[in-house]
Length: 341
Image (cartoon, rainbow, N blue to C red; front, side, top):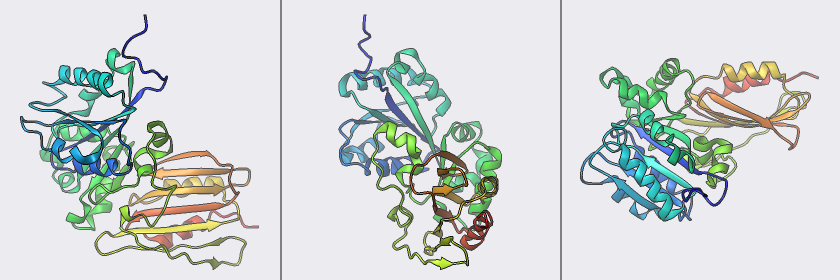
């Protein structure tokens, strides 16, 4: 007999879990995500609030998606059964292609994941990603918050170090390095008001799986990062490789954007070392890289990178975003990888 909960298509419903301590910015992130698409008829938002009155749910009511609230407890403990029932009811009622779960600030993502692995849930849905929002101020006081605070970070696929505009800007590189030391496998991106581009959240495979429409392939002047204009200057360094780079930052954001373009191939081992040695504050890199025998597309987010084959033009075209990054120093190291003819 066919199980009545099974989706009509083979593709499972994608679940995105948003975690983070109280007041970190989860609802702000969710509002940003929901603004990326105009048609949210196949998206359901499940909001868990600790208390009898739902506030976040009310803030999301006009998003265009269906919002379901779980109140009076935490989905990682007292509302475990309710969470399972709610997810099954959501499938029956809405038949969505994706579900965002915004967990309460005192929820342990590991406990939520265990619920999502239950057979009745797992056969129809799959957890695509855990995104944890971290208030930068909280990191400095991390010893006060205990094991739950660390669990929210260690289970994350992506950590957004949020509200970086509210602390001493010189602490940002230090915090990024400390987080990577404590959680070596983490992806960490500094943000203001949780503003990031879609690909930073999903990476290439995730936004395709979830049907999320990216704003653009990759645009360094995205308003999400506070950039308004990207002045590209062609420079000739006495070789066939022409490259241009420009920086655009404001006192309010301290983000830096620059780019590199060249036609001569890169030494692959040198380029791999270049990626490994990037400073933590350089958190976004994307584009094609030309080697002697192949060209690849690299997608680098918060310390981790994906390499896929590229059948476009055999050239190197890279775009960078960082927090007060030294663009000249980074470009110089990249130029050292060019194979001299």
